[in-house]
Length: 536
Image 1: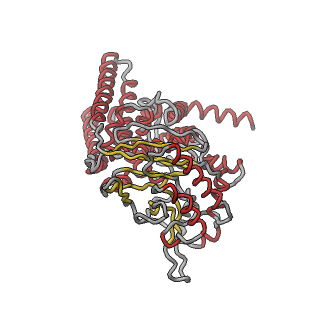
Image 2: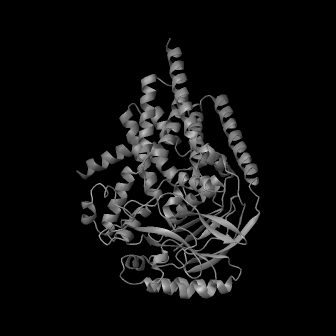
Image 3: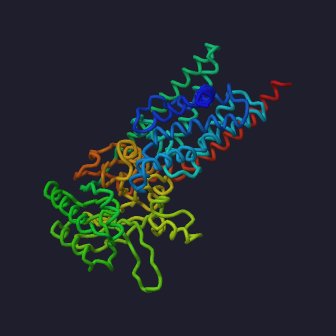
């Protein structure tokens, strides 16, 4: 029995060796790895679909192997999160990871299977098929429901390859499409290796095109070295443990302990950085409600007594709740961000988080089936905010419009586009990454959030509970970065351009998917026409 099982897996490993290789290449090219296989990581998988796959089903399973392996490498921290956040045994956490790997990125095999079906149906040659697979992959990764929305476009920013500067034209999803098309081009060159002159010609053209994109990105990025304002922001990273966070959220103590820790660190920071204009605390740093109608309560008075002597405004994550005008109605609590003065007064309407994390901040389908909340009371169920809006702080005689993002919202290009449309001057992102371990997720999340600053060309200040706390300017310059899982305070001189121009991405570049669909349709039509011409 053991021998037959071993032989079976050995046979399958050989049969799907190219998809396995692609999974390893993609997984070890994504953040925090160097981008060593960026332009050819999907090539083995797509060659498998062209040369070895004889059916849609086989292509699907080849793509499934690739997505499973790359997810296991790049997102193995899911097991740690399940154990730490869900407080479930390690063996169950590992099983949860395997389930995640099995289903989370199914758009990869779906794109490959669809491309194979089109190849077989219209007798397409290798070139059009590769282009079709790349475009289908790009289109599906934009709409496929995933918990942690990633793609290889972010690797350009992580690796500081200047092509990332073009994201203010087509977004990082557009850059991902370019990366995928380069992968298709490499696959085509591989298929033509026996035709040396043709292969070398295409390799030369690919190298020239990539170099031109690098040069274009470099010079385009220089156009954003324009600033006419600056503000000194001091961030406080208190490194609060997960258990303390949970107990504080559940009202089981620790609220005063956590508040005192932030106040003490902020007081020390005020002495170290007297030029501070505004303090920023991370997501739910103040572990209680901070709406104006709660300011007379004990924890709120503790905050006021600590911040009043400093005389500076504070941006902080906290909880929000509407006034309970009717005791028979259970008003929702919200994960929120507040802008308050040293006396706790709300300087603007607090922002309430809109894009909630499934199973962390809401239970899917619980609105349709409330009984689910009774079955799983350990899952938080926050209210949902009304979308992006700005908070205004008067500074040196004029208003600064802050664009709030809470944690996960930094992954959504459309959300940040909404902030730009509302006139945001500076994006402020507050996050708690304490559930995700070290070192993969904190860096992945950081650069996925940084990407929004490039797309809309606004500086972004990121304050976290456990790291990485840092800032990026509109020109792509990254300021100092905090250590991970360490108490830390630091000040950032954030330069910005008042009333900065709206990027092409915000105005219409985010609709690049329309151009991709046109190219896809034309490729299918001309590919089918050429195939018919060859047969006649």
